[in-house]
Length: 237
Image (cartoon, rainbow, N blue to C red; front, side):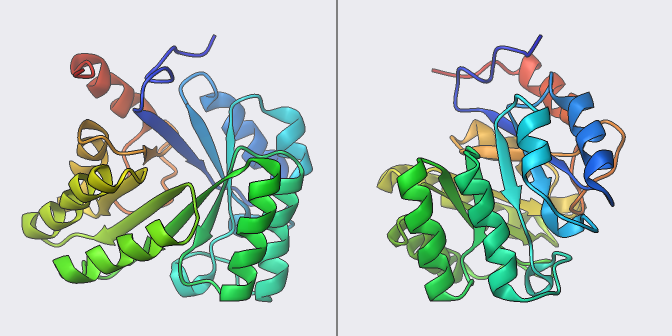
């Protein structure tokens, strides 16, 4: 039986699933279904990516991601083919798709238009695996996401110190002021605390690794660890 949530609240945990094959990824996703509010399927990590088997096998809301190499993912093929897999997820009825902010404008419009017709929520994402921009740089990214027409934003950076973490978490205050659902946190050891703090500051969602420990980003906590911490710190009203 699925946990009630955090599901009835804004504190969503998305468990990121990567695997070499569709079958392997479905097995891994099945193990965490009872703990996850959302399951992220990393299509870019699959040798032969496909959407339909996941939609048929899993009941938890799914977020399909097809991250290109130019933003830290594994997809090295044609951009149109990459986006077509996200469109396939939308047409199949996926609850969420992740689309990079820096994607080609015309392809981005295709995804946003298709998602609007199918009521799929687009999470417009921006990642930096090396550094954290200045406060102004982060604010500019947030504003671009807000003006895009996407339903939510995701901003993730590499933190090297607590100042990096504080700059990113400050985005949650700004996102709340403009009424834009945002997940903002940091990778790396210094950023681990931000994966929980983003929820406590009203963040749209945080991302966790399966309990097997197969993380998809540096510093990712396991879903059971985050569940345990949320249980000890009930949501404030």
